[in-house]
Length: 376
Image (cartoon, rainbow, N blue to C red):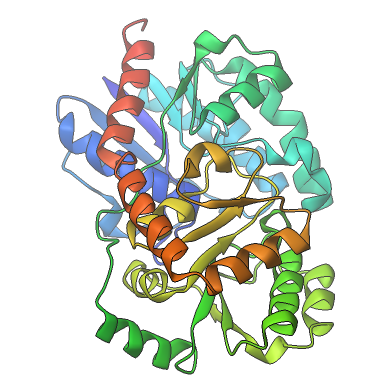
Protein backbone atom coordinates (compact mmCIF):
# COMPACT_ATOMS: atom_id res chain seq x y z
CA UNK A 1 0.00 0.00 0.00
CA UNK A 2 1.01 3.62 -0.58
CA UNK A 3 0.50 5.91 2.40
CA UNK A 4 1.01 9.68 2.19
CA UNK A 5 1.66 11.54 5.44
CA UNK A 6 1.44 15.24 6.20
CA UNK A 7 4.83 15.77 7.87
CA UNK A 8 5.00 19.57 7.70
CA UNK A 9 5.51 19.81 11.49
CA UNK A 10 8.69 17.70 11.47
CA UNK A 11 10.94 20.72 11.89
CA UNK A 12 14.56 20.26 12.93
CA UNK A 13 15.20 21.67 16.44
CA UNK A 14 11.66 23.12 16.49
CA UNK A 15 9.48 20.17 17.43
CA UNK A 16 6.39 21.02 19.48
CA UNK A 17 3.70 18.64 20.76
CA UNK A 18 2.24 17.50 17.43
CA UNK A 19 5.69 17.38 15.86
CA UNK A 20 6.87 15.01 18.60
CA UNK A 21 3.74 12.87 18.13
CA UNK A 22 4.51 12.66 14.41
CA UNK A 23 8.15 11.75 15.00
CA UNK A 24 7.55 9.16 17.72
CA UNK A 25 4.72 7.34 15.94
CA UNK A 26 5.94 7.48 12.34
CA UNK A 27 9.52 6.50 13.18
CA UNK A 28 8.14 3.27 14.65
CA UNK A 29 5.41 2.60 12.09
CA UNK A 30 7.56 2.86 8.95
CA UNK A 31 10.20 0.53 10.41
CA UNK A 32 7.59 -2.00 11.55
CA UNK A 33 5.90 -2.09 8.14
CA UNK A 34 8.53 -2.27 5.38
CA UNK A 35 5.92 -3.86 3.12
CA UNK A 36 4.28 -0.44 2.67
CA UNK A 37 5.59 2.71 0.96
CA UNK A 38 5.33 5.99 2.88
CA UNK A 39 5.40 9.39 1.20
CA UNK A 40 6.32 12.14 3.66
CA UNK A 41 4.95 15.49 2.48
CA UNK A 42 7.02 18.47 3.70
CA UNK A 43 6.33 22.14 3.05
CA UNK A 44 10.00 23.19 3.17
CA UNK A 45 13.47 21.61 2.99
CA UNK A 46 13.56 18.69 5.42
CA UNK A 47 16.19 17.15 7.68
CA UNK A 48 17.47 13.72 6.75
CA UNK A 49 16.95 12.62 10.36
CA UNK A 50 13.20 12.45 9.62
CA UNK A 51 13.64 9.91 6.82
CA UNK A 52 13.38 6.97 9.18
CA UNK A 53 13.69 4.03 6.76
CA UNK A 54 14.22 3.05 3.13
CA UNK A 55 10.48 2.83 2.53
CA UNK A 56 10.09 6.57 3.26
CA UNK A 57 10.03 8.86 0.22
CA UNK A 58 10.25 12.59 1.04
CA UNK A 59 8.49 15.13 -1.15
CA UNK A 60 8.72 18.91 -0.70
CA UNK A 61 5.57 20.78 -1.66
CA UNK A 62 5.81 24.56 -1.73
CA UNK A 63 4.91 27.05 -0.43
CA UNK A 64 5.70 26.82 3.31
CA UNK A 65 2.42 26.88 5.25
CA UNK A 66 3.00 29.95 7.42
CA UNK A 67 -0.54 31.37 7.67
CA UNK A 68 -4.18 30.41 6.89
CA UNK A 69 -4.16 31.52 3.25
CA UNK A 70 -1.17 29.27 2.59
CA UNK A 71 -2.78 26.46 4.60
CA UNK A 72 -5.72 26.63 2.21
CA UNK A 73 -3.48 26.73 -0.86
CA UNK A 74 -1.39 23.79 0.35
CA UNK A 75 -4.20 21.47 1.43
CA UNK A 76 -6.83 22.33 -1.15
CA UNK A 77 -4.67 22.81 -4.26
CA UNK A 78 -1.15 21.43 -3.88
CA UNK A 79 -1.86 18.29 -1.82
CA UNK A 80 -4.68 16.95 -4.07
CA UNK A 81 -2.40 17.04 -7.13
CA UNK A 82 0.33 15.12 -5.33
CA UNK A 83 -2.06 12.51 -3.92
CA UNK A 84 -3.54 11.95 -7.37
CA UNK A 85 -0.13 11.71 -9.03
CA UNK A 86 1.17 9.23 -6.43
CA UNK A 87 -2.05 7.18 -6.53
CA UNK A 88 -1.89 6.72 -2.76
CA UNK A 89 -4.24 4.46 -0.82
CA UNK A 90 -4.38 6.60 2.33
CA UNK A 91 -3.65 10.13 3.49
CA UNK A 92 -2.62 10.39 7.16
CA UNK A 93 -2.55 13.84 8.78
CA UNK A 94 -1.04 13.96 12.30
CA UNK A 95 -2.11 17.60 12.74
CA UNK A 96 -5.74 17.05 11.70
CA UNK A 97 -5.67 19.09 8.46
CA UNK A 98 -7.21 17.29 5.46
CA UNK A 99 -7.95 18.09 1.85
CA UNK A 100 -11.65 18.61 1.19
CA UNK A 101 -11.07 18.65 -2.57
CA UNK A 102 -9.63 15.12 -2.68
CA UNK A 103 -11.37 11.77 -2.22
CA UNK A 104 -8.38 9.73 -1.03
CA UNK A 105 -9.31 7.78 2.14
CA UNK A 106 -8.01 9.78 5.09
CA UNK A 107 -7.24 9.73 8.80
CA UNK A 108 -7.16 12.98 10.79
CA UNK A 109 -5.34 13.03 14.12
CA UNK A 110 -7.23 15.77 15.98
CA UNK A 111 -5.44 16.29 19.28
CA UNK A 112 -7.96 18.76 20.65
CA UNK A 113 -10.37 21.49 19.56
CA UNK A 114 -9.38 24.20 22.02
CA UNK A 115 -10.00 26.83 19.31
CA UNK A 116 -13.74 26.10 19.49
CA UNK A 117 -13.89 26.80 23.21
CA UNK A 118 -11.36 29.65 23.40
CA UNK A 119 -11.38 31.28 19.94
CA UNK A 120 -10.05 34.61 21.21
CA UNK A 121 -6.76 32.95 22.10
CA UNK A 122 -6.00 32.76 18.38
CA UNK A 123 -5.36 35.44 15.78
CA UNK A 124 -8.49 36.40 13.84
CA UNK A 125 -7.72 34.54 10.59
CA UNK A 126 -6.48 31.47 12.47
CA UNK A 127 -9.67 31.08 14.50
CA UNK A 128 -11.85 31.66 11.41
CA UNK A 129 -9.95 28.93 9.55
CA UNK A 130 -9.95 26.41 12.40
CA UNK A 131 -13.60 26.83 13.29
CA UNK A 132 -14.74 26.65 9.68
CA UNK A 133 -12.55 23.81 8.42
CA UNK A 134 -12.06 21.44 11.34
CA UNK A 135 -15.71 20.47 11.58
CA UNK A 136 -15.54 19.66 7.87
CA UNK A 137 -12.29 17.73 8.35
CA UNK A 138 -13.83 15.68 11.16
CA UNK A 139 -16.87 14.86 9.07
CA UNK A 140 -14.85 14.01 5.95
CA UNK A 141 -12.23 11.78 7.64
CA UNK A 142 -12.71 8.02 7.27
CA UNK A 143 -11.39 7.75 10.81
CA UNK A 144 -10.37 10.21 13.49
CA UNK A 145 -7.62 9.55 16.00
CA UNK A 146 -7.30 11.58 19.19
CA UNK A 147 -5.19 11.46 22.33
CA UNK A 148 -7.58 11.24 25.28
CA UNK A 149 -11.10 10.19 26.18
CA UNK A 150 -11.80 13.84 26.97
CA UNK A 151 -10.91 14.91 23.42
CA UNK A 152 -12.95 12.07 21.93
CA UNK A 153 -16.05 13.12 23.82
CA UNK A 154 -15.43 16.77 22.98
CA UNK A 155 -15.08 16.07 19.24
CA UNK A 156 -18.17 13.83 19.21
CA UNK A 157 -20.34 16.38 21.00
CA UNK A 158 -19.05 19.43 19.16
CA UNK A 159 -19.12 18.03 15.62
CA UNK A 160 -21.84 15.37 15.89
CA UNK A 161 -19.44 12.53 15.13
CA UNK A 162 -20.30 8.87 15.78
CA UNK A 163 -18.03 7.69 18.64
CA UNK A 164 -17.29 4.47 16.73
CA UNK A 165 -15.41 6.57 14.15
CA UNK A 166 -12.87 7.82 16.71
CA UNK A 167 -9.94 5.89 18.14
CA UNK A 168 -8.02 7.05 21.23
CA UNK A 169 -4.24 6.66 21.15
CA UNK A 170 -2.76 8.04 24.34
CA UNK A 171 0.50 9.95 23.88
CA UNK A 172 3.69 8.35 25.07
CA UNK A 173 6.71 9.79 26.81
CA UNK A 174 10.34 9.69 25.73
CA UNK A 175 12.16 6.82 27.42
CA UNK A 176 15.20 9.05 27.89
CA UNK A 177 13.42 11.03 30.63
CA UNK A 178 14.58 9.78 34.05
CA UNK A 179 15.47 10.98 37.58
CA UNK A 180 18.99 12.24 38.27
CA UNK A 181 21.17 12.21 41.38
CA UNK A 182 21.34 14.94 44.03
CA UNK A 183 24.83 16.01 42.95
CA UNK A 184 23.58 16.53 39.39
CA UNK A 185 20.56 18.47 40.67
CA UNK A 186 22.84 20.89 42.51
CA UNK A 187 24.80 21.49 39.29
CA UNK A 188 21.56 22.11 37.35
CA UNK A 189 20.26 24.60 39.92
CA UNK A 190 23.57 26.47 39.89
CA UNK A 191 23.34 26.69 36.10
CA UNK A 192 19.70 27.73 35.74
CA UNK A 193 18.32 29.12 39.02
CA UNK A 194 21.24 30.72 40.83
CA UNK A 195 21.48 27.62 43.01
CA UNK A 196 17.93 28.09 44.36
CA UNK A 197 14.99 25.68 44.41
CA UNK A 198 12.57 26.39 41.58
CA UNK A 199 9.11 25.72 40.25
CA UNK A 200 9.09 24.77 36.57
CA UNK A 201 6.79 25.36 33.61
CA UNK A 202 7.43 23.76 30.21
CA UNK A 203 5.42 24.51 27.07
CA UNK A 204 4.65 27.04 24.39
CA UNK A 205 3.84 30.44 25.91
CA UNK A 206 0.34 30.31 24.45
CA UNK A 207 -2.60 32.08 26.17
CA UNK A 208 -4.34 28.78 26.98
CA UNK A 209 -1.29 27.71 28.97
CA UNK A 210 -2.46 30.25 31.57
CA UNK A 211 0.98 31.77 32.16
CA UNK A 212 -0.55 35.03 33.42
CA UNK A 213 -2.24 33.34 36.39
CA UNK A 214 0.84 31.21 37.02
CA UNK A 215 2.91 34.39 37.32
CA UNK A 216 0.34 35.95 39.66
CA UNK A 217 0.21 32.80 41.79
CA UNK A 218 4.00 32.67 42.05
CA UNK A 219 4.08 36.34 43.07
CA UNK A 220 1.63 35.54 45.90
CA UNK A 221 3.69 32.50 46.86
CA UNK A 222 6.76 34.71 47.22
CA UNK A 223 4.80 37.28 49.23
CA UNK A 224 3.37 34.67 51.61
CA UNK A 225 6.48 32.56 52.17
CA UNK A 226 9.41 34.97 51.72
CA UNK A 227 11.02 32.00 49.96
CA UNK A 228 14.10 32.31 47.75
CA UNK A 229 12.51 29.99 45.17
CA UNK A 230 12.61 30.83 41.49
CA UNK A 231 10.12 30.15 38.69
CA UNK A 232 11.63 28.80 35.46
CA UNK A 233 9.59 29.23 32.28
CA UNK A 234 10.82 26.94 29.49
CA UNK A 235 9.40 27.53 26.01
CA UNK A 236 9.39 29.78 22.98
CA UNK A 237 7.81 33.25 23.25
CA UNK A 238 6.09 33.05 19.88
CA UNK A 239 2.63 33.64 21.45
CA UNK A 240 3.76 36.31 23.93
CA UNK A 241 1.09 39.05 24.07
CA UNK A 242 0.12 42.21 25.95
CA UNK A 243 -1.74 40.29 28.66
CA UNK A 244 1.34 38.22 29.45
CA UNK A 245 3.56 41.28 29.33
CA UNK A 246 1.29 43.20 31.70
CA UNK A 247 1.10 40.28 34.16
CA UNK A 248 4.87 40.04 34.17
CA UNK A 249 5.46 43.78 34.55
CA UNK A 250 3.01 44.00 37.47
CA UNK A 251 4.87 41.32 39.46
CA UNK A 252 6.70 42.41 42.60
CA UNK A 253 9.05 39.43 42.28
CA UNK A 254 9.65 39.47 38.54
CA UNK A 255 13.38 39.16 39.14
CA UNK A 256 12.76 35.63 40.42
CA UNK A 257 11.21 34.54 37.11
CA UNK A 258 13.69 33.10 34.65
CA UNK A 259 12.81 32.62 30.97
CA UNK A 260 15.09 29.99 29.46
CA UNK A 261 13.67 29.73 25.94
CA UNK A 262 13.35 26.38 24.20
CA UNK A 263 15.52 23.52 25.52
CA UNK A 264 16.65 20.18 24.10
CA UNK A 265 15.16 16.94 25.48
CA UNK A 266 18.40 16.32 27.39
CA UNK A 267 18.27 19.75 29.03
CA UNK A 268 14.56 19.33 29.76
CA UNK A 269 15.29 16.07 31.56
CA UNK A 270 17.75 17.86 33.85
CA UNK A 271 15.33 20.71 34.49
CA UNK A 272 12.39 18.42 35.30
CA UNK A 273 14.48 16.17 37.53
CA UNK A 274 15.92 19.08 39.53
CA UNK A 275 12.71 21.08 40.05
CA UNK A 276 10.92 21.43 43.38
CA UNK A 277 7.68 20.90 41.46
CA UNK A 278 6.28 21.16 37.95
CA UNK A 279 3.48 23.76 37.68
CA UNK A 280 1.37 23.17 34.59
CA UNK A 281 -2.04 24.84 34.88
CA UNK A 282 -3.51 25.48 31.41
CA UNK A 283 -7.24 26.04 31.11
CA UNK A 284 -7.44 23.66 28.15
CA UNK A 285 -5.44 20.58 27.12
CA UNK A 286 -6.30 17.61 24.96
CA UNK A 287 -3.55 15.65 26.73
CA UNK A 288 -0.59 17.48 28.29
CA UNK A 289 2.62 15.56 27.52
CA UNK A 290 4.76 17.67 29.92
CA UNK A 291 2.75 16.25 32.84
CA UNK A 292 3.98 12.75 32.05
CA UNK A 293 7.51 13.91 31.22
CA UNK A 294 7.77 15.50 34.67
CA UNK A 295 6.44 12.36 36.36
CA UNK A 296 8.96 10.24 34.47
CA UNK A 297 11.69 12.43 36.00
CA UNK A 298 10.30 11.97 39.54
CA UNK A 299 9.17 15.61 39.67
CA UNK A 300 6.00 16.33 41.74
CA UNK A 301 3.24 17.85 39.61
CA UNK A 302 0.66 20.59 40.09
CA UNK A 303 -1.84 20.65 37.24
CA UNK A 304 -5.38 21.71 36.33
CA UNK A 305 -8.57 19.93 37.36
CA UNK A 306 -10.35 20.45 34.01
CA UNK A 307 -10.36 19.12 30.42
CA UNK A 308 -7.94 16.20 29.87
CA UNK A 309 -5.51 16.93 32.68
CA UNK A 310 -7.22 14.96 35.50
CA UNK A 311 -7.48 11.99 33.10
CA UNK A 312 -3.76 12.13 32.31
CA UNK A 313 -2.51 12.95 35.83
CA UNK A 314 -4.66 10.40 37.65
CA UNK A 315 -3.99 10.39 41.41
CA UNK A 316 -0.33 11.32 40.95
CA UNK A 317 -0.63 15.13 41.01
CA UNK A 318 -2.14 18.02 42.95
CA UNK A 319 -5.15 19.24 40.97
CA UNK A 320 -6.16 22.91 41.08
CA UNK A 321 -8.71 25.21 39.50
CA UNK A 322 -6.65 27.01 36.80
CA UNK A 323 -8.90 30.08 37.06
CA UNK A 324 -8.25 30.45 40.79
CA UNK A 325 -4.78 31.92 41.41
CA UNK A 326 -5.15 31.34 45.15
CA UNK A 327 -5.55 27.58 44.61
CA UNK A 328 -2.39 27.55 42.50
CA UNK A 329 -0.55 29.54 45.18
CA UNK A 330 -1.72 27.22 47.97
CA UNK A 331 -0.56 24.16 46.02
CA UNK A 332 2.88 25.76 45.66
CA UNK A 333 2.99 26.52 49.38
CA UNK A 334 1.86 22.97 50.24
CA UNK A 335 4.57 21.31 48.14
CA UNK A 336 7.27 23.77 49.18
CA UNK A 337 6.80 22.95 52.85
CA UNK A 338 6.02 19.24 52.76
CA UNK A 339 8.88 16.88 51.88
CA UNK A 340 6.72 13.84 52.58
CA UNK A 341 4.06 14.95 50.09
CA UNK A 342 6.67 15.68 47.43
CA UNK A 343 8.17 12.22 47.90
CA UNK A 344 4.73 10.59 47.72
CA UNK A 345 3.79 12.42 44.50
CA UNK A 346 7.20 11.67 43.03
CA UNK A 347 6.77 7.94 43.63
CA UNK A 348 3.18 7.89 42.37
CA UNK A 349 4.18 9.87 39.28
CA UNK A 350 6.95 7.47 38.32
CA UNK A 351 4.55 4.53 38.57
CA UNK A 352 1.82 6.35 36.66
CA UNK A 353 4.15 7.41 33.83
CA UNK A 354 4.74 3.76 32.94
CA UNK A 355 1.28 3.64 31.35
CA UNK A 356 2.31 6.08 28.62
CA UNK A 357 4.47 4.46 25.97
CA UNK A 358 5.18 5.55 22.39
CA UNK A 359 5.35 1.93 21.22
CA UNK A 360 1.75 1.50 22.32
CA UNK A 361 0.77 4.82 20.73
CA UNK A 362 2.32 3.82 17.40
CA UNK A 363 0.66 0.41 17.51
CA UNK A 364 -2.81 1.82 18.19
CA UNK A 365 -2.35 4.43 15.43
CA UNK A 366 -1.36 1.65 13.04
CA UNK A 367 -4.49 -0.29 14.00
CA UNK A 368 -6.54 2.76 12.97
CA UNK A 369 -4.65 2.87 9.67
CA UNK A 370 -5.40 -0.80 9.07
CA UNK A 371 -9.12 -0.21 9.63
CA UNK A 372 -9.10 2.20 6.69
CA UNK A 373 -6.69 0.23 4.47
CA UNK A 374 -8.79 -2.93 4.72
CA UNK A 375 -11.67 -0.99 3.15
CA UNK A 376 -9.57 0.29 0.23
